[in-house]
Length: 145
Image (cartoon, rainbow, N blue to C red; front, side):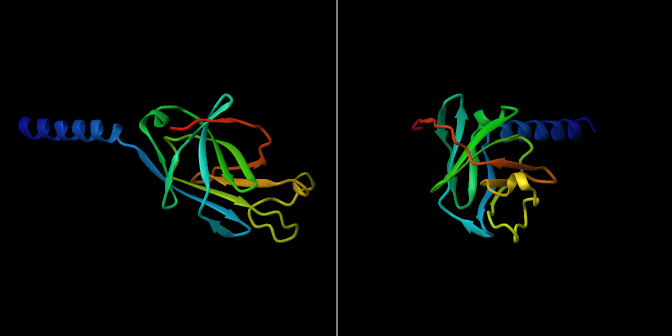
């Protein structure tokens, strides 16, 4: 009986240590007027500098150093679309960014007068957490990693 409990505890300990050393892949999609976009660049923002993140096959790869932080500030860039938002990496299951500037056919943005003439992005991070942000006008120093 003791041996089986010991084996189970050792197995769980090993799996816990192994899973903490891994990076996390998050399925990420950027939609413009309902169409998914492929060539999006993602960056982690630290004060005024931006460090690129690995992004391949619609999956954002967060390394261990980013998973230990409670909140990360990200910047997504596609052509003239610049979106700045925060995520909680340990709670994140998927990331969907919606942009729709049509007046009457908006599906993901509430119809309000303050959103009427702005570039508004809706960010869905899993479960029922939805954030509405506008286009970022800040400039950052881009680092190479």
